[in-house]
Amino acid sequence: MKWILAITLSVIVFVACWWSLEAGAGWAQGDALALAAVPFSLVFGVLTWWAARDQARPVPHSADDIDQLRSRYGVRRISEAEDGLSLHELPFNTFGFTTPWALNDIFAGFGFTKRRRALNSIKHRLDLASSPGGTVVLEVHHLQGGAVEVVGYTSAEEAIKLCNPVRAIPYDLTLYMDATNTKVRPVAIPVCLIRRWKQRSIRGHYVADVTVNRSSHRRWR
Image: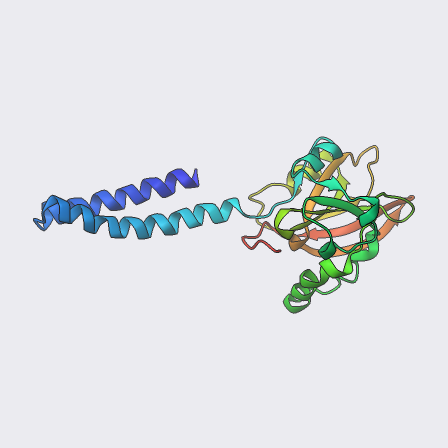
């Protein structure tokens, strides 16, 4: 819809300039067309940037099952040879597992400076295992371009609210590290949207109380 609007407005600007120069100012058709192309190019460039910017916005997403979620970006499980490596040492489009409290300290601060520092350091502070086991239960995706997402489980209703691309306010939820009878929907959350992360346990399940910001125009690498 935004692309259609961008193209339509650009054409309107071009036609309006062309008509005003040729019919209003008496310019020759060739000169009017040439000059009208200048504001058209400027408007078209700004509006297409605006439309593309919105498409690049990172958002949480969900799937029917974990295999479908992993196949969304074609991530593969890290190999045994890559076991124990930190994110910055791993190739893109891979996933592995870490402890759910590994993010506690990283997202302990609410201020902009602490948050920025946390996002910049996360790739060096998160070591991944190739298989879950024991306390190593939090799935982490390392996507193309360096974006990082954490994976957990929510109810179907929570997943719809969380993944709403036009959600204008932060969303609070309790994210489970494994599926339960009611938390059956896997969700992937970009770490650049996480405002708060506090790990705890509920009846033998590892969970995290998470505050997820609204979708941001800024893509973190």
